[in-house]
Image 1 (tube, rainbow, N blue to C red):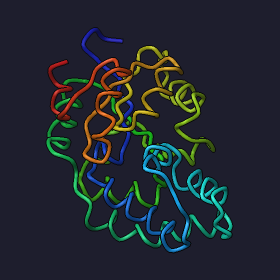
Image 2: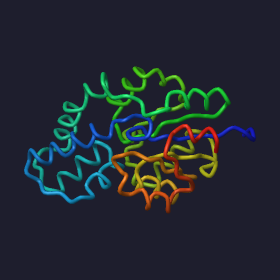
Image 3: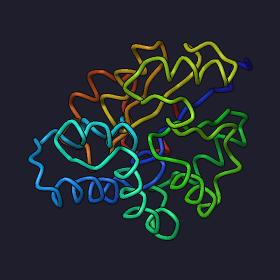
Length: 215
């Protein structure tokens, strides 16, 4: 690997795009509709799980719908937002283009399904910047499983220690580090209450995506 080249593995929701308010509203709407009680840490728990994992978790909370039915409901509530409305976070598009221009390798690993992920990245004009765009569905597991990071590293073709994982969710950052990746935490308003914990567990913590250009 060239001395100046970096290999990144980016989260999507809350890291590349300002979608966490949509994700949270969709997921909490379902719990509210079914009268399910939940704690203040619900968003922290479900964010790394993806739609499939969250559906399974919701069944454990007492929702009687099947996992397939729950995922379909999540998709129904969120589809238009991702396809037409959700925007990139501040400085993301410009920074990704500069990282690509200087020779860095860019990849995505997200809990969101391809039905949300792909149209959004294409609409924002950044799809072609990535070597790989993965949903957790591609690995049949979640970002709470260290094996997903190991599998991603194998597919990228780099030692896991050479890859920089960037995510706004503290649980995902912890798991990626446990798997052997270098992990950067990034600020998102949805996880602001965990900022101190994120700073403590991350190899680096950044407030704005453009800081990647100076690291």
